[in-house]
Length: 333
Image 1: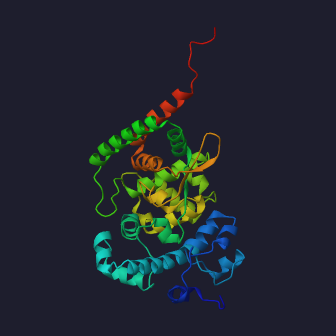
Image 2: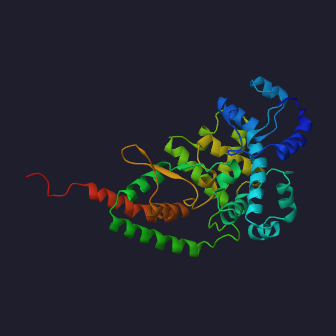
Image 3: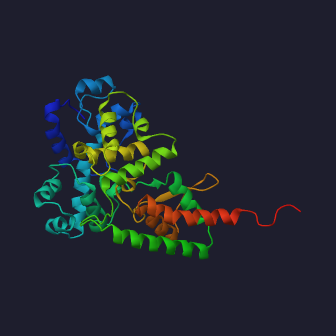
């Protein structure tokens, strides 16, 4: 970038830049982001437009532009180019996704970064454009290495015999049929669960696999903006999620993707087994990609329910796996 842009002019400059910049896949090179050692500084330079003095103190150019904001501008460009290629009108997109015509027009013209919450982004990406939410927002498919118990259950299911897999898959289908009847799907996204609760559960599952907590994982600088915002969000009454954090939720979720290496769909979709490469760690410690279609179906069902439904699905799988590995016999002679 050839010129220094004053802070109050930079949003207009970003509009101009993204309207004229070539579209690349993936959209943004995060090499600068990855070199910043402190998570709070990474949050500041990627989620906001920092003051030039702050950027200079971090060793960045004064006209450095936030990567996660640039991603969202490029996402607008990519998504509406594909929408046009598929012959889908903006009116039809708005009807299917619950997005106003005014907002769609501004996204299409790259006048605004793509700012869809999960209940709009899911139908827009998955149902209309037939791609993962991560691909739309980052320009690459991403991947999910299942953390903790999710990985163990997938490894156990994968190790079962064909007959045992059929029985466990049948149990998963019946469990989720009951769950879905008890939890009606949302109008546009098809989600059966509250999006805030889903993000929290998925983040907790990831950090627990590291022996940590969300607060410790996401920064230990006392009084920092990102730590305080996340603390309020994660500790809010789960039945009444903190509304003050909703405006930051889109950026926060994209930020989680960068910090965890997990695809966006992991955090915002119940079943993400369709367009996202999924991996698990087997019992030998090897990272294995899920390629078997039946295992993908099982993982999708297992991940879709709440904790009670997941236990109903996982308990017989783990019990069957362990039973097959306990030596038979009546003991020593």
